[in-house]
Length: 112
Image (cartoon, rainbow, N blue to C red; front, side, top):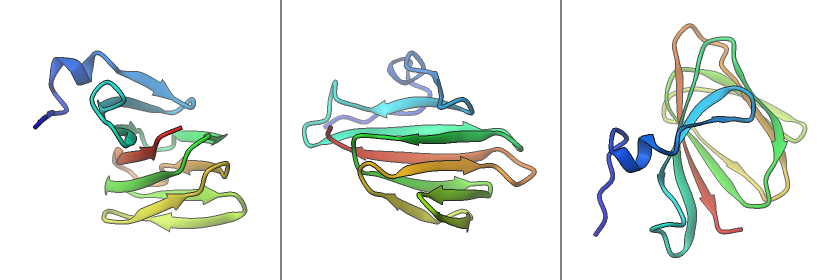
């Protein structure tokens, strides 16, 4: 069993800026996972955006707190705490924090 906390050294050492907007960290990744690509947490300040990009794997964005506008290809939807968005492999996607608080998301990705 592996239990990882977002404040663990192994997580904090992975801090990076994701697609121009969010500060992200890998909670679990290919160093430990066997069938999944990764589980990440990302924080997006009000008015900031995870810029449109395409990934070579399927992803799920889960909103833990805050609000935003999620865009997947030509669809755009308001997302709120508790919402999960499925992003198919190869789909262009972005997320804009349109609220007044930090938008926190969990990202689960398949293997690539």
